[in-house]
Length: 171
Image 1 (cartoon, helix red, strand yellow):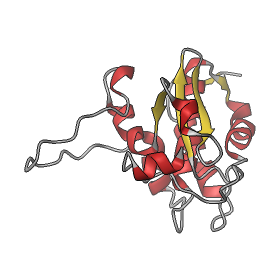
Image 2: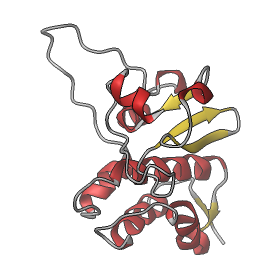
Image 3: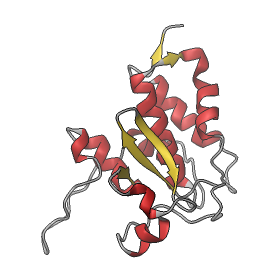
């Protein structure tokens, strides 16, 4: 699937890191009635995604700013010669910048996708504030970064969770 995204869709934000599904730099979101889940595109063939709703890193900011789920990641390109509209970042993307979460940035798309899946899950099923750190670790602990040590990625996501109403419950 990653070759299809890169070569045929010109969606190059998802990264080919390890090529064996371990690093998760290649993940995209697959949306269905039960929610969003991460799928590793380096080990999953394009045929699996046929007929499914897929969001790549390129669609995350658009989805966060869209009025409805149907618009997620499907914004039409601007007509030739028209000025491009700047799209605000999704909250997790903004917090990654504010927390200086990444160094080289190669793994960042995977972390954004993973955090987005987590935040969408928490919007449906909030957790106790005391469980935030473990929940983040469980959700993002499988993502690999060779530069940072994860602390800033995790603290940025924690910042979003604790400062966004509806992600946590009292308890």
